[in-house]
Image 1: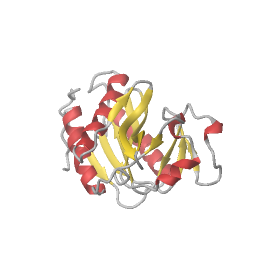
Image 2: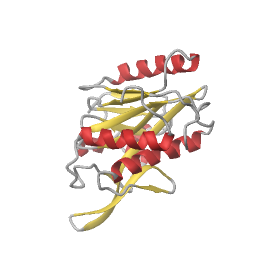
Image 3: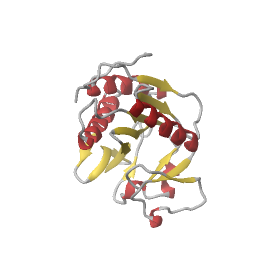
Image 4: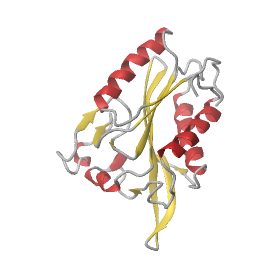
Length: 223
């Protein structure tokens, strides 16, 4: 969906590991600023220390190992998810009044960004009916399987979006075993590294920025 606004989007890539409370506080403040017209829209790329987040639909029984990592309740949609080093989290703060007031279309555009980004690195990511996120069909130890490589969880306030998406580059996949990721038990989780792709975070970032620019029809003010 091409963007309706000609104003460029701020692109921010934070070095190191950003604490989850810090990220939430920053997003809350930025949402208010975007709504007030005092700050530009934002694509914020971060990594977090190991943690679990519980979305608005999270079930307590899906937290399999309480105490393993900090758990943060959050206002985004969805259930439990894991964030940690080696996973690129993209927080997407856009004013949908400038991009068409359609939340479902926005989520589909985020899915398209993941699909295009991983495709640029040689991975075929796909949507699956009834399952949120992006999935990869592959074989492991000769056994066909289908695993999630990208997750999506968003919130919208007064048509301003926040939270966003996560793509697994090279996280410790064992950390996902402490939860039922997004409530899905029949499938697992994969990463670019797990699929044999040698791309690093910088390569994924470039692919993701290109996808975001093309899908949303925006420019970046500092890229």
